[in-house]
Image (cartoon, rainbow, N blue to C red):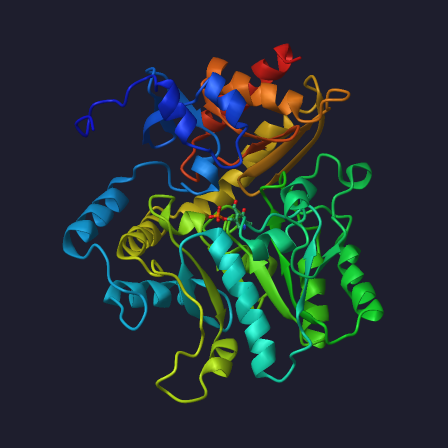
Length: 447
Ligand SMILES: Cc1ncc(COP(=O)(O)O)c(C=O)c1O
C-alpha cells in the first residue's frame, strides 16, 4: 500500500482491472477507459491523473455536506481507535441509541423507533419484511402483496428489486415478490419543464383505489414510494399525490412506506421530505446522507405502534428475526452523529431551501440547448432529458457523461438519456453556474 498521502497509481494493470466487477456500470467500456478517483474535498474530486473534478452528484446522492468534512473524518477515526466493532445482536453501544433517538426527533409525527442496517437496499427490504410481519401478527396474514410505482428505484436486494419500477433492473431476475405498480406520474405532454411538484397528476394516486377495487382488499401489506423518484431520473410527485396515497392507505389498513434514501437529509430542503409534504407515512427508509456518505449506514424509522405490535410473547425470545452483523456499526454511527451535527450547525437543510430557486433558474436556463427535450427540478435535484439517438437508447446520455468526466472535469450521472444533477447542499451559486455552463458546452458539441 502507498503511504496515506501518496496518490494511488494513475494506471492499474490488466489483471487488477479485470478482477473488480463494478456495480451498475458498463464494465467493458469502463475498463477501456477507467475513471479513477484518488481524493475528494468539498465540492471536488481529484483523479489519479491529477485533475480536479467538480462533483455535481454529491457522490451518489449521499455526500450532502460535501466531501471529507473534517468533523466527520475525525469522528470516524476517533471511533475506530476506541471501539471498532460491537455486536449488534444481544448487545449494543451507547452512541447507536443516541443516534436512534436523534433520528426519531428529526422524523415526523409518531415515527419514533429506528431499526439500523447498512444501506438503502437493506432499509427497503427491512421495511417490507416489517410490513409483512406486522400484518401477520395482527392476524391479517393475507396481506402479502406490495404496491409500488413505475419509474421507481428501491435498491438492489430482492425485495427492493421486486417493488422497483425500472424494467431493465427487474427483467433478468423475475419472478420476484408479488407486487402491483401504480402508473408513473410523469407525462411530458402535461408537465414539461416542471419546477417543483407538477400541477398535473395528483389524481393518479386514485390508481390505488382502482387496484383495491380489483383486488381482494386485504391482500395489500404496504404501498412504497419515493416522495421524489431520484435514481430513475428525478420525478417529483405531483401536487396532492402523496396526501391522497396517505388517505387511501389509512382508510384501508395498508401501511405507507416512504423510501427517503435520496430525499432524506436535505435534498428537498428538510430532514425528511415527509415534512415538505405534511404527510406522515408509517415507515421511512433512510441511508446515504445520514452519514454524508462517509460510512455505510441505513435504517428504517417507524411508528411506535408498529414496533409495539412486536413486543409480545416470551421476553427471552427476539421479537423480530431480522438484522445484520453491522446493524448500528460504530463507525457508521459515529459518522452519522457527526453528520447530523454538521447539518444542524451549518443550517444545510435551510440552505438547500434557499438555493432551490437559484438552482432551478440555472438548470432551466438549459431549455432550448441542443438535444434537450425536458428538464425537471425539485430541491437540489434535476433531470435533463436528451432526445435519444434512433436505435441506440442511452448512447447520447453515455456520451454526455463521458464528455463531462473527461473533457469538462464534471461528475454528473446519466440514466439512459437523462442527465441527473444533485449537487451538495454546500454548493455556491458559482458552483451551480459552473455546472450548468459546463453542461451547456457539452450539449453544444454532443452527437
Ligand atoms: C430511493 C432509493 N432507495 C434505495 C436505494 C438503495 O440504496 P443503496 O444503494 O444504499 O443500497 C437507493 C439508491 O440509490 C435509492 O435511491
